[in-house]
Length: 416
Image 1 (cartoon, rainbow, N blue to C red):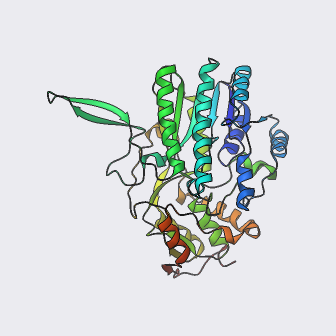
Image 2: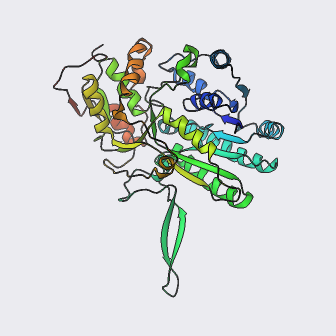
Image 3: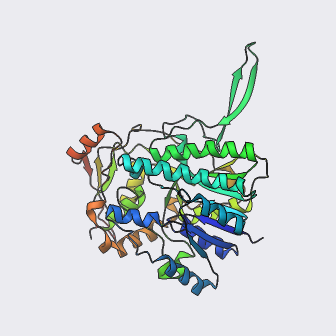
């Protein structure tokens, strides 16, 4: 059944292809965005590897190729509560997909201004949406894009469940009682901390006001294009490669396209969860189609396909491209090595057959990296933001710890 869906942050890396996919499925889609991601590009002096059209050009191109219309409202949900409330009361959407948060851990650690902005924007925006839903008595399903980072990356020693953990408490008489709690958060950055706060806000509003909420704990997204963004040059998705917003895989692929060593920070033993952008949009659509009942607890779903150590990811790209691997000091305050075993049972049960890194689509993303290599500003590729003053000093002074060159010669895309 077609629904009216607000996509908050619908101009961003995950929001834009999601808005197109939901529109293609026949839903009435409205994008709400303050275009802050574009302003941050200007602030950092960098731009997406892929050329991004203006919002009106994007929407016109979508109408041209699909015959469907996506409406757009310029609105800052964290700052303009009155307009947000009025818009929700007037439009009364069935679903709100919430991407409207500053999404980069390194950016959130740059300094006091970025830390404060991340907290004010992310927590303020989420709470404004929740308060507005209650104020206008709107029974809309809120689908929020969270992060695997709320679980922390210390290694649990067991499969991390989907959001909730059963613990046993003994009362004063020594009798055991099972209790289900939110999985204890261990945020590794200010950004991850805001997502942890989001969880508590959702828990409160679900139990107090019976809001219907799905919180998707997503891994690192790789890939750029979806079936919808491929349909017109003006629909192309963002490709962030620099040290603040570029995910580790995107950075590796751009480095390989330029013939630059792949930069691994620390031992490379950090294990991360990964998901292809095409599966991101499919997972959102599945969540939209399967809302919780009013009065249910928050539905938490792990939105991942697989887990991989960073050094193993580098070797995968090196094998594909012939790029060398360079080890550098780690700017993050985190364990040098960790395991990450995470359940993704819900989406599997709903029929998702996720795309894996070995399924061949890395070549498509590498081709995009090579096609737009002339747009790369190499000054912005290195990670320059450290989590502590001591790490920043080490990062500023240190060169490569080790460089490993492949035995086999490079293939197309390497050595440019």
